[in-house]
Image 1 (tube, rainbow, N blue to C red):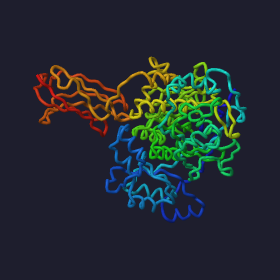
Image 2: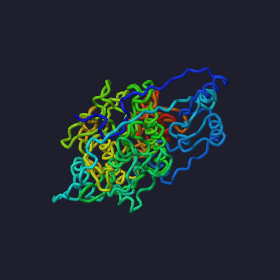
Image 3: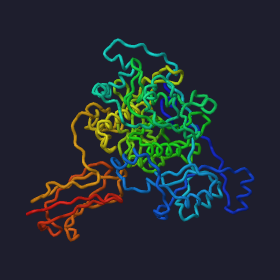
Length: 583
């Protein structure tokens, strides 16, 4: 029987590591005693109180031109200035004076990642600009490949699928070869891979590198720009640090005809190393958040992450099932933020279907509203026994889609030309992300909800989604080639316009996490008087809404000829439209 920790995706070990908790009295004298006893600073999130921040105290964040264009074209909240800014020198100086070290500022969380002593934490909590201070949750991870790492290269087959080698089956299930034959390879699409490291000198990545499609790389563990193994730091008892990421990247981006072809072999890539796999190595969720924000700033169109969180060193820090509501965990918040800025985020659902007592072992950030959670099926299209599933704590279906995740053919770290069969939602996630990349290539200005819905619309369970398969296995060729029209996100479309007897209002909701409570669509005349309203329940970003109005006002009388305006309050946004009525 396959051990659940041997399946291919990164998660914490179930083993608990109890941390010593010390209560203290906040006085300078007490702090000095604690310091002398060896109390060290701890990593924390310092959340800022937005109500205390004025625009003058913020400064622009330097996004790439590509990131700015993507956010304006495909983002749900392009006007959200705080997401495109960071605190100025005055605020940062205040935080710096009350911490040992600042690591980075998170635009997604509106928070600083920093190191602070117990006394400094208490001081920070009294600052007017600080909303709260939250310790960073850490865990130890153990992971082993579930197939021998040194599997032999397969010989080339004499069949019509010769160029795909052993990867033909995993791609054919998604109808990827048809898309490839029509010229789609992910060209022009930028994909960020967040994982534990990557062996860039493997033969399957040389086409990417020789064509300068490896745009950037960043190691968030050792703070450098080398995501390959650095022997001393990265060799663990579980093998090379970069083995997992190498396999994951090869599934989506590899290109070695006759042996292995990735789904989006023609795409551009950003590589982020944020996870440690050694059994005594700390993995921190804040590094994942930092990697997401780096990818956003570098202009990523897609994020593919085969990492997940739930159990931590200190059991008191564990995420509970109630936390998996799509908007509570820091990693889920980061994914939602990226979604609203125009990024498709594909996340492994997890390999824990048989581990947790609650439902199906779903992990975060697969629960995020903005996550396209990937489950795993075998080559017969049956759900893998280990594949995590929902519902989420707030009742949504997860996973969203499924892809092959049992015995996928991948590159490995054993040498520059080694391969192996591996299993886990780690490998179904990049397959789904690759399908999304082919769709983005076809519809470059479409928002992420459009890409997600297109994949779902032509998936095997589209008419009857369930909690094990979600919407099922997508058919990427049908998603690409079936005609469809897109609509503006920022405007309420009114038709017919001008109108005589009746009017229809059409728009898309803009917030990935719907505001609580009801809102209203309101029609105003040219004098600013509200003549009609319709109560609505907000829905998740990208969901279409179509409403009918018979031109009767609040007093049930037909309105007069003239110009009218229509608005819908969607969270902090107002969607607007204007039209004429002529009787």
